[in-house]
Image 1 (cartoon, rainbow, N blue to C red):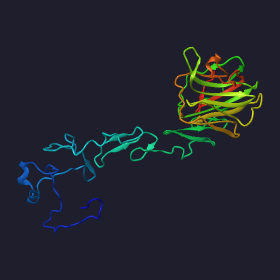
Image 2: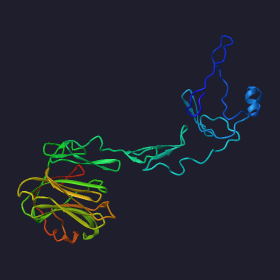
Image 3: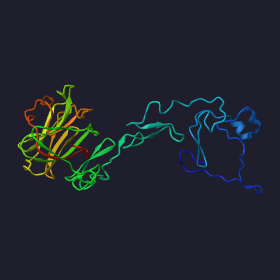
Image 4: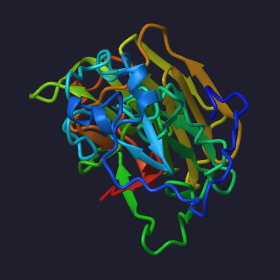
Length: 338
């Protein structure tokens, strides 16, 4: 016998006769016996009497018994009550973990994907295993991750070759400074992280490459969240607003005219960035108090917008893009631009 994990106390009874086996074919009682059984109970047990207190769990030969009244393991209960409140009643499990009352523990938390710990209180470090291939940069978003892929790579883990992948064949749209493409609805969770990669071949120095923001039913801009990539003298500028005011960051060098280049732009919470090909990445921080991007079901545009009233009043937002746009990816997923 052992109590609370201390060293076991052992005892051996002298053998009498040839029988060394324990024969227990009758009913199993816990906490005492019913009055009708009193005569069949060993005298030592009769002298002690029935048990008073709580019993949380019972396990015999690796089998755990369900002690709840009217459970499959309980056939009869007399003068039995609940020993305290349901341990799950105060919802101890964090981050959408599911609580279940256990037989060997007060409760157990079944954690949602991406969380761990007794109370699901810790984020699993999903970037610790370096899931992003070919030097992609991993950013944790809740219990998942987003890869910022190097130039020429796309996919959830940067596993696809942008220009040599039949499934994600590169698509090119030509803009002449007076048109735009309203992108078909696409699924992208950009609340915490928005990472975009677009290939550009500009033929004029200024223009709106990408815009996604709030607008009213008439297509006019309403004060709210947006993200935009704009060329100013061939230099990519990334603008964003997460509710705390407009912020911007510009690349450290201009694009080469009539040459294909990859422009990566985006933000994680308040941190915005933009870079060209595999060159230096410029970074900036938006004002405090707001950090999440809410774009709901609003439309995104490429090359410009159908009505400049849809744009915030920013001087640099006054020209449509001229040149070629080839392959847009958002959070690693290719977006159809035609």
